Length: 195
Image (cartoon, rainbow, N blue to C red; front, side):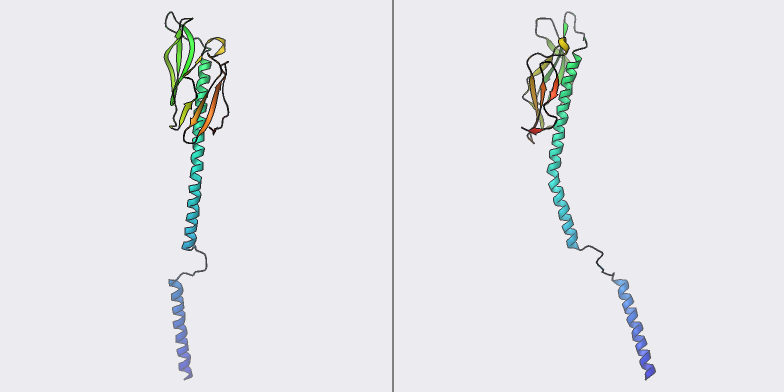
């Protein structure tokens, strides 16, 4: 009976160890190294809310940069027209060079060469360069129809000091450009402000 009992106990131990071994091979150990589904859902929600909060800030930033770009482009075009007046240009026979004129619409502006006879209003029909405002939300406001730079006296223009405003109509942001009576062009501020 002693031998039989020892044999039965040994068989039960072998069977128990095989069962335990097979359990460990089938089921992975859960020792807290993974994420639960609740934790994953919370992380996804937090990331989504962060992205949704950042989108309006990004759109405002890009809108301001487009407005700054258009203001610098217009300022450069005005400065170019002023500087081109210092170099003599040829006109049709019987006419003399009378400067450059920038004409404005809400969505573009063009530099024209002006020729004419002294004492009469110049004819500005020779288009030199046209600039298009590339952002559909930016418009030129508060501007005269044109600015005329004269060839004499270093590029002064006719009239008193002028200003024009570029406005982002969706964000209600503006940048002002000033032209002094000497012809000098400058931005009021390089950063957009609320109109």
